[in-house]
Amino acid sequence: MNDRLKKVLMYKYNAEVQDALYKIQCYSEHELVIPEHPDITAEVDKLLEKVAQAEEKMAVIELHYGENKAEKQIL
Image: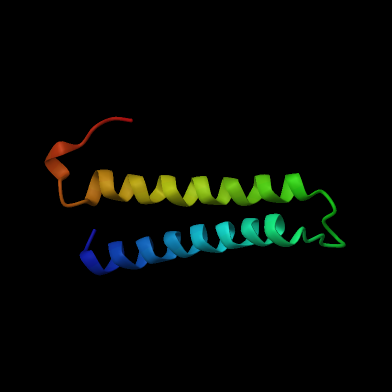
């Protein structure tokens, strides 16, 4: 994987993480209720799943295409 592609993917996944964390923060700080989504815990659970998926993808990129390729470890 070339450096530019890696960088673009890392920005994409980091943006997904930040977006989800911001929404969770808004739900918790402002106790927002979305009319079409009254189950806040389910919405936060979905957002946490997005965070987990994006962070896992970033970890895989670093594992296989990071600077220390020789130090790969199986998770």
